[in-house]
Amino acid sequence: MTTRANNKLLLQLLALSSWLWYPQSMEKQNSHSIFMGYLMWLFGFMGAHRFYYGRPISGCIWFFTLGLLFVGWIVDLFLIPSMDRQADIKYGVENGAINYNLCWIFLVFLGLFGIHRFYMGKIFTGLLWLFTGGFFLIGYLYDLLTLNDQILIVNKSQSRT
Image (cartoon, rainbow, N blue to C red; front, top):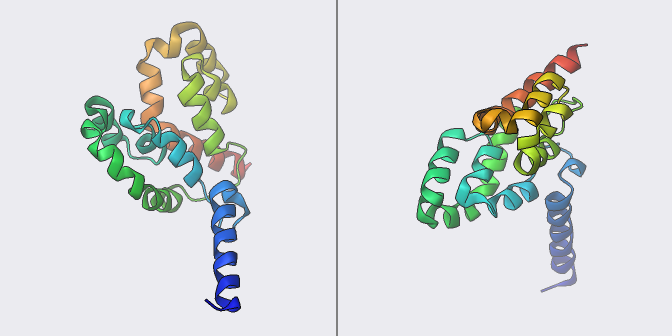
């Protein structure tokens, strides 16, 4: 390889690494992060990455079948980049105060306590989730299915004011 080819390859690798770790630093800002997608994929046999990318039906299927007996979970390792692109197109980038990645972390790890609802400014339902264990898990499941849309609505309503 020539020096020019080596330099081009090095620049491509640097761009890829900054895209994986800092998705907001690219020219086109993303609503969802590929890094977060792979992090959620670790819990993917329960459908977490599919819920994260706004695919609630297949997320439920993965949840109840353990990622279609782990085969679909392995296949998703290669499908995450396309799911990320589709989520960015579907949910766009609203410059609202609610960050998709942070809200999803709150939901997945602290959802039963309603921390994600407090973060979105939904104080009443946050208290309800806190005192009832995610409204007896029914509200937690509802949030898994609809969190992306909830964030989009909150961000749009904040951007209008």
